[in-house]
Length: 97
Length: 204
Image 1: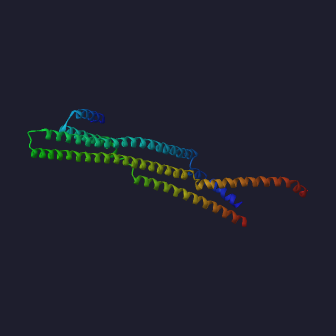
Image 2 (image 1 turned 180 degrees about the horizontal axis):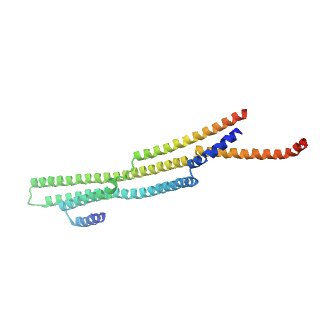
Image 3 (image 1 turned 45 degrees about the horizontal axis):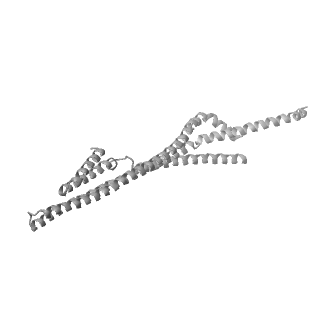
């Protein structure tokens, strides 16, 4: 049953209920109430049963990846600094000669 | 001079190696573009999630209001049904007072059970709807957090690609030294040229 089917059925039963009395009215009310509950279950089922497939673990993993690239960049910068220092030192040594 | 000689020699020997170790301009440009696109994508995701969440929450809030209305209508109808039953019982002249009391109690029990079911139904509906609201918010939050973490990883990857490789830094230094060498040679040649007349005179 679709949501539209539920809505139509509920409206029909509500109309019948206006003319009912006593236990008949109570039974119809119970039926309408149950249909309303079933209707909500169907409405939210796709959301409540969904597995979005993305967890905190995935986020943590992305953070680790970012960190690894940062470490690699730092290593390159350190190597560059070493080259600069070596050349600077070499120049100073040659100037002494 | 030794330094110029050493760096020049290095440049000749390792030039192909240095070239192969660098990151091409195209890759660096592509990486920069990727960072920009990811930022745009993240902003689009944030807007989309914000709008969709507002819309869904409004739908779910309307359903919560409908659930409350259903419950109130049920109670009202059960109350009316009970009054109808009481009227039927007490208007029935064939029943004794004791039978009327028994029928009244039976009817009350039945209506009370219906009311209990209505309360349970309302509780279930509200629980389902609130769970959906909560799940949507959590999922949206996780997905956006993921997008942010992805954007950060891409930015860090870009930083790694944009950073000058040691080989490139060395090439820069060699280029600098070669320029200094050219300048030195040019100045030396100029000095020799200027000194030539004096040398000629001395030789004479």
